[in-house]
Image 1 (cartoon, rainbow, N blue to C red):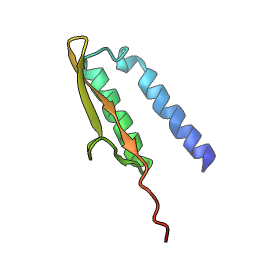
Image 2: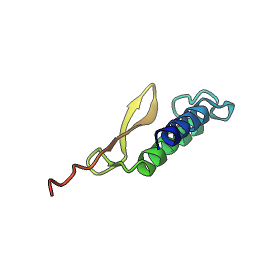
Image 3: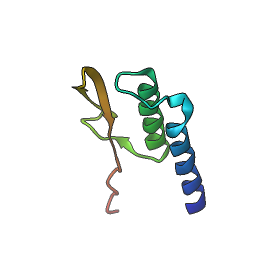
Image 4: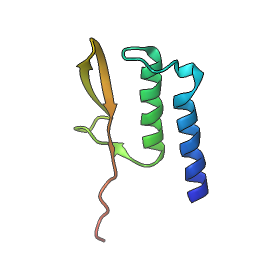
Length: 79
């Protein structure tokens, strides 16, 4: 399991750093693809939306509409 998780993290990092992401500049389609890739990875890892029930905390900066990806781990039941 730990080796698999490490391989998955390396694959995500490689995708985010790839030439296809073209630097992920603010307001670009590549940044939006990176955002979606991170959200999918969070969801695949079992996280749930962490910003008022949403995955994205949107804000404006540098003249572009941006978003943090926010996930959280559900609390375990004491049972």
